[in-house]
Image (tube, rainbow, N blue to C red; front, side, top):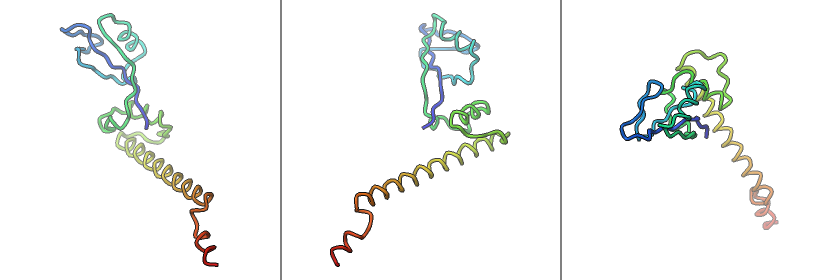
Length: 135
């Protein structure tokens, strides 16, 4: 399943701490890395008042409709989905969902074919063993 790179940030202080226009508390704040410049990510990671951890979240845990266009494009790139001709957010979401469904269907078909081939190789996928007993 595809993932989204996120930085999880908490404040060391009970009172919380402000950095980059955000208020951090002892509750975890998850920020997708696509939302941060390299400089901002470095500023968070090196700030002695904050605790940061890089994590990966399953993309399904994040609703596509709640994501911004740049986040959707980054997700599509990580899943190797071509969005070169897609401009509108709704169309990007539809393309991602359609591609995921097509990939899932292709994986199901491949698994079924593999299972059928394994049965034939084992001699359990055909009626030949039953027919041999009748001959």
